Image 1 (cartoon, helix red, strand yellow):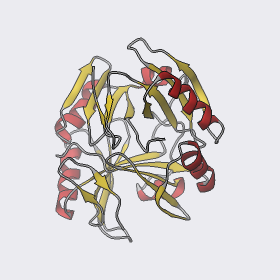
Image 2: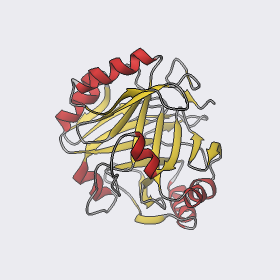
Image 3: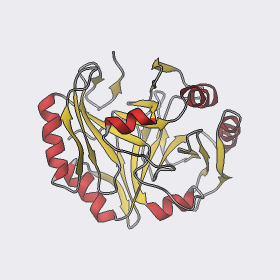
Image 4: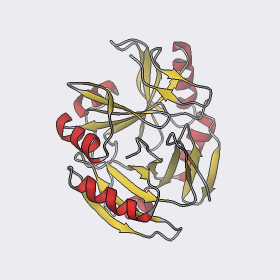
Length: 140
Length: 140
């Protein structure tokens, strides 16, 4: 099957609070929004932020737990950008989980939780390339 | 900031079990693997499956919960493919959460949990386009 993910959907408790983090913190523009969901067109797929009760119902689960066992990463061009983005996100509803530092394998990264406790790694990884359209390629 | 997600990392308990679901169920080829992580090059970003204890430590959290408040979607070309993919995944360690049916907004979809209880929506959404490289665009 095609090596493809179409959507990442995050369960959220409060649409306005989440929209502030993504819209003003990251500065991302929605491609669609209604009173229960906001979609963002990303680099080859779509990010959705959907009321958690609706998401749980759609997948026929009673309860979803937080913080979940996953992380999303946003890579940037240099180590100073890592610190800058973490600072901006923390002013728009984000909570720093790990101050930026250098991992063993190189680069620089920190972690911020969004207002619904979903983890974002903000990373500079000089081995991975990012093209003009934001498409990210694995590198060693 | 660039509207871009570089990596989705899923916390997993058992590398071989997870690799079977993604490698034989979805049929995806790793771009890198070692005894604690497997990376897959996806449509504009990278999917990582990493031992959950290591992921939790990296984000400085004591404990991660499951099932988390998120879902990933894999879109396919027609409704028959939805049923076929769900059936194949269920034979490779997946567990059906919702049998495929038609949502109100159109199309067709079901949900499968991976061996670590992460939710995958398998969907046919005729309004969204997927190009040859698997890049997915939002549509109404």
